[in-house]
Length: 410
Image (cartoon, rainbow, N blue to C red; front, side, top):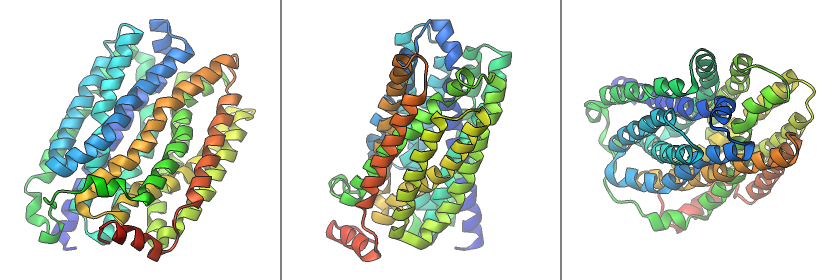
């Protein structure tokens, strides 16, 4: 990779990274504002669970169409359209006046955010050389953890000094900054990209991607892991405040600690996966088991400090599993199908968000406010993910066979 191309590729990676952080700030704010929203609109824990799940209905529904649209119409159009759309509905969240209006707004917000993952992943496949794809993808996805760390630090103080509605109005402006940065970073970018890395205009095959059994098993692993992941991230602020008596300001800063561990784990794990290839599945299995144990220990934690310690350990292994899953499309399909493949895999992970917050809200309700049953439920989901990961092929030849049989290039 020549110096000019490397500089331009890293610049675009930085902008995509920022876009992911914006998406996490916009979606995480509602978890921190949950108690205020519940009081303002007189919503129960179960109804608040529905509100959290509404986002995932839209987000999951858009994953596969978003991947297909990216492969068909290109990345830049999808990236700009997605960010503008979700930023509008971030602001609209502050206008909600009832449960019904909030459900609709968060659903449409999810539709907007749902177009970003596949488009950003396709951009990586365009602007980076093949040997750099796994590292670039894992670095970009570490933004999820950073976004999860920054969101409480930004939003919690804002929620303390202004009404929750005004917070959503304010953070919606971050999307405008992203669009400007993206247009600037990609201007004349094709000049710096060698012919082999230009976006492949050849149509991808949706049917071939669907027939890839390896991708389908990774989808299932992601589904069960993300039941635990989204359930935990959605209800953790409420858990810390109601069970361990922390105030909103302290929750904001303490919640950043596990995310920092996860960010470091994500960056390191991308390098490990590049070297291990298919053998990385053993890390996924081990990580799922460790996550299950940590979730159980969190349900019995005697203090907030102990709960955060267990969550920090869990996030290190969550990041390894996430790196493995998010880089899979680059390893098993050719460039024109990357958007579609990522959309399909990510659909599994985000569909989990539809049911997880609602089930947790229900379990918390029927347990009289106790979180123990809901944490045990999340732990069981991790064990199921580990069992499915056992079935993934290990050696390079097995993965090569999967791709060659289904018409994919290495």
